[in-house]
Image (cartoon, rainbow, N blue to C red; front, top):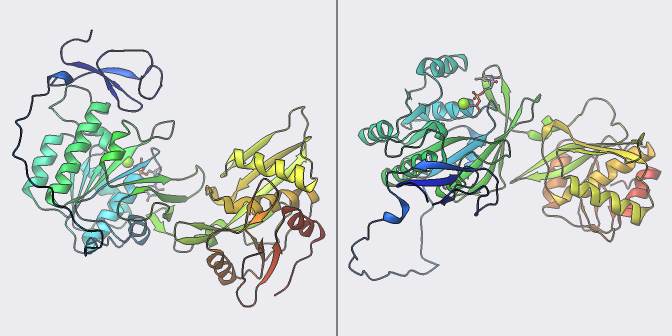
Length: 457
Ligand code: TYD
Ligand code: MG
């Protein structure tokens, strides 16, 4: 039996148990239950007095609700992911690997919003005020009227935020915050949950937008309990591939905007620069396109993004050929290879296959199927695609090329960037001056790659 007041919190999912076990009954993870002392044993919740019944007020769906006001921070890529600016009284969780640039991003957001007239505070539990200030100076933000504080005590922070009105408060990071109402150590699930709960309540009550920075665990989840993700209004992931300067802010949950929106930044000496035209970044435009490369006309959030997909098909030296993918789903690659084998007579059984999405971007759209297949075929035939050709389309198991969403937007973006040809589904309509090679079956598309025959406009 647990000692009085002791509970066991799973460090993976945040579920609380009254007794210890090797495996978390809630999420099935092993060795994640850690004893935590709470101020109140869970069974001892005081019975609340029955409140007087109030009538439940119903409203119609068609009633007029004004759009929520927004604080435009002036960092356009951030505002876009928020859905057009930060909503006052909302709580946002920003997760990312250590060193990816979360502190840099939020200092920039706070400084930019402060310059635009919002009352902003940046509270760091990880760095001293001098360190934050030095960074701000390096980034040319020293003149922004942001109030800085280095503090980890939740009580001090909440009291401070109650004493002074703010529009936007950044808490960097939620894992360093610590509440004296709980005995568990900082960073533990209990503390993170308590701190997040208190700050979210404060946000709602006082109409302050609160941005919580969260570290990400090895498994890719925001460290600590999943429950924090449920408490907040929006969850953004800040991602970046090691060795690339690009950083992508991706909406994973957003009560006030679209969730598939992305913001693109480039990390430089003076902090993060916004990338207004990501296509230029992910495209290798120098020189002729090599065999095995296909430009995919994709959509990220609300924006068309062109990105190069590179494939290499090479004889395998081992009994089991290798399949390696960067930036795409390996299950999807296996499916495309199987369809190429079964429907197009291309054999990969004794060949290694490598697939790479250039620039460190991760693609999850099925619309990339045809581009991946074209890149694979191009490498297998050692036949380069035209320099000015984009590819898109979904592939079914039966070997059909299917239409995808927003084909016009994809083709227009390609045309804007100087592409004159496309390989895509039959249903697509190219803009003026652009040729479209229509393929209703994957086998036709692959034949075109092999013969290098393209339809002009
Ligand atoms: P940081 O914002 O501290 O990351 P996080 O808060 O996510 O842990 O960013 C750390 C990295 O960013 C660090 O490796 C240095 C790099 N960086 C730059 O390249 N240029 C800059 O102007 C700044 C401020 C940081
Ligand atoms: Mg940091």
